[in-house]
Length: 498
Image (cartoon, rainbow, N blue to C red):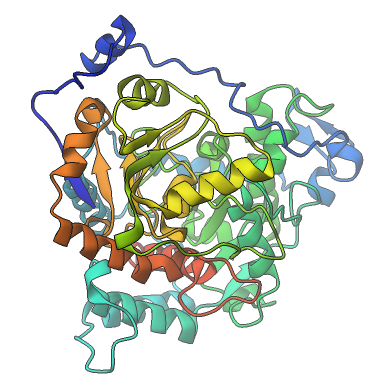
């Protein structure tokens, strides 16, 4: 991803910037955010979460005798489960916006000095992962007819070998514990659909999933952060801490019933969560691998251990690939396009500088949500050279995947956002990252990119597109497999031996 950083900010001569915008660009702007206002109107409702699994829970006392349809572990087991594991967890501290090169350095640092706990005892599965790590590390350049294009990967040889070994040996156990609607109920439409699609496809998978947990290399915690968030202010959950405790209780349940969490401190367990709050809701169980949409490196996302879950706004479960593709470069007459709600502090600044300022900069607020409005939104993305992916309340946005979907070069404006599959993809090859403070120079930045460079990036967007597509029946290298591969890859390179 091309990254642009200007030492001095050139304000657009056609803009009339407010004092608030100037204070932000000077570094003193107060970043405002209403914690509740970002909830979507169409969020699912949960009126009786406790009807089955929490009917006798007592959040104030910390007991939950029928939590998730099973008994909690004893106090002794609970003390040796998740509570004692976090004392060794020290997330990397990020003080300010980090560059792509710094992200890469943090990734290497994470691999070289993994903070995963050493397992209490070694297993055949551990030895298989250690062998896989050695083979991946020693991967040679393939002489086969290339299926993948090297330019869009950090190291195509390692990725190909890692993917092959995942297909050959990886086994996943899915915990049966947990009751609907928070567990085992995938929601496959809307802005948080990624977690639902993965859950649906993972639970229905026969290649990777095993019934015997002793055969597993990874253990999946099948909960929905979207459904858990929707339970807030219901009869069982009055505060965010109640939601955090609910997940902690669930892990203590499986840690008391099975030996696998305690053996590694949760390092071989993983969750997939897309709600904005997931990074906070899961902080009490953060020793596991977390695939999160809200991959904010400054707020607890661990580069190298956690992995970024792409945000995919799915409108049709039956036709997730509807309207795929876009116009060829010669027919893309718009320089840059953005349209969206004024969520967070950044988008109003983007509009203040660029709305109605230049004819080739199509920067709008929200478009109508009717059929015609959605059609115009798609046509703008399909007709633009660059699509602006400006953060909302949090660092992630569905526009990153939408840009790739419609073959528009993504321009990501979201400091500290770790892009999806950062472990293996070379984002510098097909996307642009602009620091938030450089919004006044946005048009100059885009115009400075040579046409030849743009054409290369556009071609690479089309090459990488296969990795961001959902299929009702997963296919090689698609989004389901890439999410699973990122979890596999991070586990392989963080495993420790006795």
